[in-house]
Image (tube, rainbow, N blue to C red):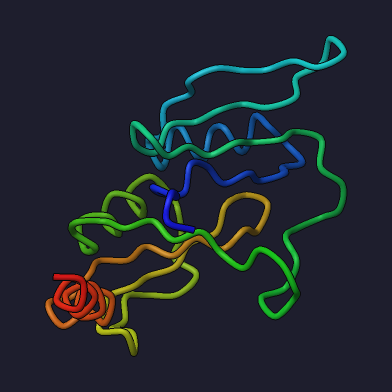
Length: 145
């Protein structure tokens, strides 16, 4: 659809809202923007990733953790970073363990992995100079010119 500008938000159901807010606000540095209530109960906490991209946290999820990697549905959240080594140092300094260390992916991007308190997988990605995404965008722009 040609009218889509970006991903506006990703919604994640969490079991423990305070533990999740500690992770996303205090460790990842997202800002809490507002809260919505429904039937006099907390329904959604809206966190800012960028001025136009947000993370919605829905409290009181059921189950013990996120589904395994191969399950149908949401697989992971990817956060693009400008300095993966700096991001890793910052997060590990705040006590966030890596679930997978820095590697160069097949798409020519550096990546490392963490998980939120509910086990949701989060990829940290730094675009590489030979990133397939950048090559694809350049090709698309040439074709459209």
